[in-house]
Image (cartoon, rainbow, N blue to C red; front, side, top):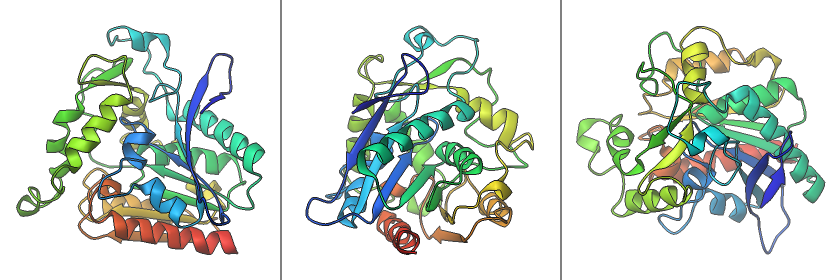
Length: 307
């Protein structure tokens, strides 16, 4: 469905899955990362089910948001042209307004007794900004969230930052499996999983050149100007919401030292927890270890939604 954003002409795409034969324990909004939209990360049906399927099966009213410039949401006009050296589009501070709009819609439609927010990677930046501004959540889940790094991150190769990027999803496999130990790379993704992910991902942007999708470059600017420049986008100490930080043990994009530093700074959160999923990369929600990640996330939500 499309909902109104914070300013005239901005439409935001929301995808929903919820239990069909039981009451819900609460609503959870999912926010994607820097390159791929919500459908690509949270609702690809590999192995018989998706993350959103697992959440709905567990009694959670699951919503996935495409922030401005991604997936089914409004794309700024420059994204219809070749990438230019103009202002990078869709910064996290602006996308946080999209999260506020989506949460307001969910509350208006469902009147849930409990509300949670989950952000993955750059989506963790967006979720962190929202949670530091608003104390209206019952649970915050940060999956491989970007945070301060003293060394460059592979996401930002150092090239000039354009308005947006044109991405070939089919070539992403090398980067995806590249953080796993060499002996584990060939078997990281079961047969057919990557191909199914590419198929779903490419379909999220039918107006892009064949075989590609467009993504705003605001996230690249956020990394360069904030996460690798010692200038955090938000203050974790301002977050009071119970927070789970979870990452895969093979994730080289959000290292253990980054995640633990973030957890240490969540000094005002009513609860804080750190979990590491063995054998998972930055994309663990789309890997066989996802069952472990799903279980840990659902368990944390069950606890926080029942308090």
